Length: 577
Ligand code: PEP
Ligand code: MG
Image (cartoon, rainbow, N blue to C red; front, top):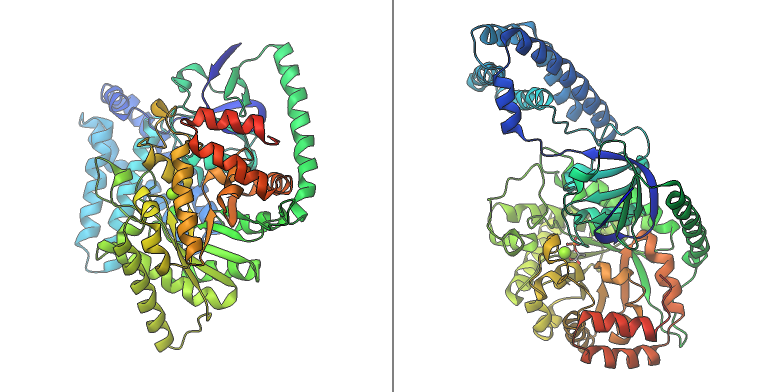
């Protein structure tokens, strides 16, 4: 038995076997080993790699057909045909017999096929050149043992262990088989932490040397509340955690009662409790958990699985489905927020030294091509607006000029759509996220030009403390309970209320019951969070009074460190974690 410690990223206890997901295989070493194979062994390995690739492509084709459609699935079927093609296989074997290392032999033949397709007059065939390149990648991956689809192939309940997990890794996951997550990299608001909380499974991240300490199939216990992981526990420890796990499940069932109630403080202030979602399925879960609306629709999910950018019509269909399902309840649609730690297959952004400080989110409006992505989203959203209660929100805004430019962009989209006979709801609120300290500090200048502010404390914390939210080595600095975060929120709330605008919080801080009294004291109008936290925060709001919350706030704002804030709150408020 061994205990390792990391950053607690999602509460709860999980007990199960490890699936070690090796995303980055060391291709250089692997290909070196490949080049020393005899021709006979190399041919055998090549034939095995072909069978593995055909099987993986077949699975991808079936999944894509069900989830996206037959046209998209056809790409994989065409790739299977290339793998099966006798001429293709014989050409590679011939090169291997000539003494060319296996990986080079594959690329020579793949390149030859690519050039043949690229020379064709027909545009369709020209574009297929890329698909052939992908076949080459698939076969090499199969040869080097790297298994990009290991997560997709999950068929029994496992704890996922990986160095990193990106949005494109987790999009493949059959979520019902995930018991929990452990990663070597990442901070408390990195993608894997958000996914874990959305799935209601425990996660511990930032565990040094994790993948060297855990082997495939090891029995693990995750204590996501304390950030502990027990590898191959003894019977006594296993029994202790099994009892604790049972209690937690019972607690959660108890909490579910609060999903149905309205979140009203003891002195009658009603707080809207909304859901953060990142897929259509979650709309229905959000309603089950008592969400008063969708406070943050992360639209990135529409881009993660696709090789091409979604069209305006495709976006419109999804937005319409979500808005119709929520009926009169608000849906705050956040335009695409990629760059930083998030990327999508359909867009290759220039590599940046400091991506979190680079071309990200609404900064796309300053680039003629990337601007089109925002325009397409805004047009699709406005077209869908007549099917429900839509609000549009722009992420990663740093200056008043950006706010004014975004407003102009929305007005131009609106005028053009109306001129072309589309229906648009008469009122669509337009707001911005407050994630950058500059916009918080200048909120008073911005307030007249927006309908609302939604504070993204995940990014606000990283920018105000200059602590990369995904970097586990400085995770000790990254704490959204730092008094500087609350001081910035206070500036925003005061400015917004002065102009009659409302303020929400959609960062992870909203789901911390320890923070509820301060957020109430600050005058926040709505809180938006991962679905599973909704009942817990509803209960927490009902236990507070505005007077007491304001008193707590006064003290908190003068405390010097996040540790002091946490301590004071634990001692002076009802803490129901
Ligand atoms: C935030 O920054 O607080 C936020 C909600 O956005 P994301 O976590 O998607 O960056
Ligand atoms: Mg953010």
